[in-house]
Amino acid sequence: MSKSAAGFLILALLSGVVHFSLFEETEVTLPLVGCGVFAVLFVLAMVAGRRIKFDPVLR
Image (cartoon, rainbow, N blue to C red; front, top):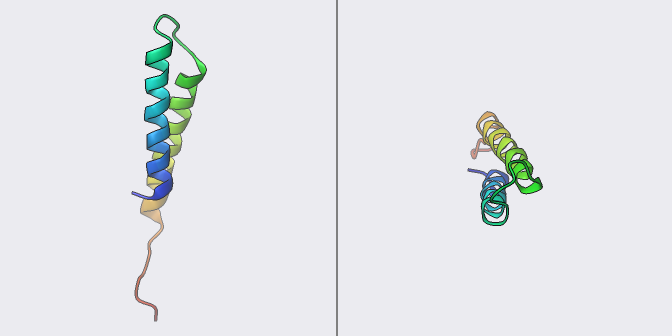
């Protein structure tokens, strides 16, 4: 897992926890929207990390 993917995962989890701890009655809040955005960016970072191949042997 790349550093950016790990960062997006942590941000998604933190914003989800903030939503559930602060806003119990409302359905859609800014932390919940942020959680969704960070989750999508996490998935994109994981896909991009799989497509970029690193060849440690320099020829």
